[in-house]
Length: 185
Image (cartoon, rainbow, N blue to C red):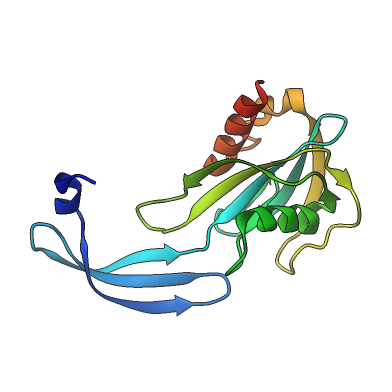
């Protein structure tokens, strides 16, 4: 790391946690900027990260979920995804979330990429996994806050779903394009 990068670092003077729930852990930092200015209540959303699963069936269909997302207040279309539990390996999370949200299971997950989710206000990363030969093995077992409709789309049509009235979540778009590139499509 260069000395210029070190000079640009912020120094955390103190931290408190005004919110600690099962759904959100919010840290409030008092920070000192490189020029000596002090900023109170710089909020950081702490997270173990999340996984996005590109599940591909033996017939080359992609498994999708349609569900309500309260933050945006609308139903969205996405690849299956979910939060990594404390102490959980991201690959295990990918298998668990696919099974819970869709009832599908397949080959062991292949890590496609890992990205920083929101470096300004969060410490979380997201992991993109490909699970091949995904087949419906049992009924979905969503969490109490999840009302999910499972859909499939032919692999050749997934790119056409990106955009307004389709797949609009940035991390999801990155996951799709990155996986398609890995698949050579």
